[in-house]
Every structure is written in C-alpha cells, then in structure tokens.
Image 1: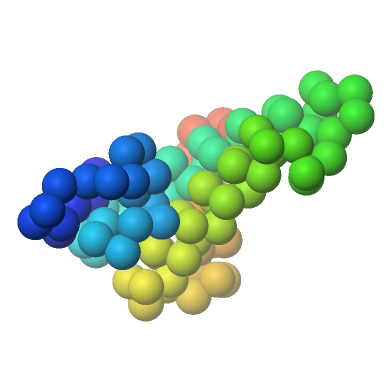
Image 2: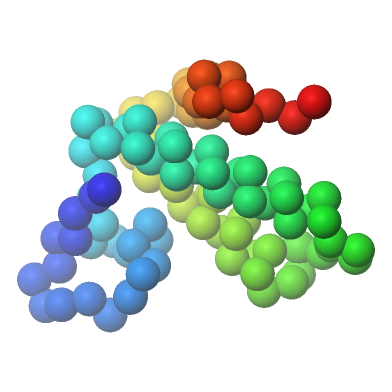
Length: 100
C-alpha cells in the first residue's frame, strides 16, 4: 500500500507513514483503514495487558505516532475525522472486532 516518490532512495526505512515522499491513493483508503484499525487494536491490547502503562514508553509512543500518522495521511485524502471514525467502526463491526 502506498508509493515512495523519492528518487534518491529511502533514508526513512519502514517509517513511510511519516515520510514526505510517501503517498497513498484514494483506492487504498480501505487498506489504510484496516491498518489503522489493527494498530488501534494493538494499542488497546497493550493498554489492557500492561501493569503500568504510560504513553512515555517508547513502544507505546511509537504506536501512538503510527496511529496519528495514518490518520494524517487519510485526512490528506479529504477524509474528515468523523469519516475516518465511521470507517474504522465499520471495519470493527464487519470483522467482529468489537470489545464486549
């Protein structure tokens, strides 16, 4: 998903969502929503299983950054926060990933 538009090679190695050369197309919105939803699930699992969760933890901070960068990329495709939220919730519902 997405394309690197850098002509000089990549110096961001696996940090594409935050790279200025990384672009996603409108056709890839569903894949980006799926990635976002799975990152949210991972974050929730981290919070629920941690004995002393803090946003300062480097792993948690990285997870939060990834989520925010995906949301930023989706908003660059003219999706509002409400539309992103709705699409994520629809993904959860359609894939039976709802907390009970």
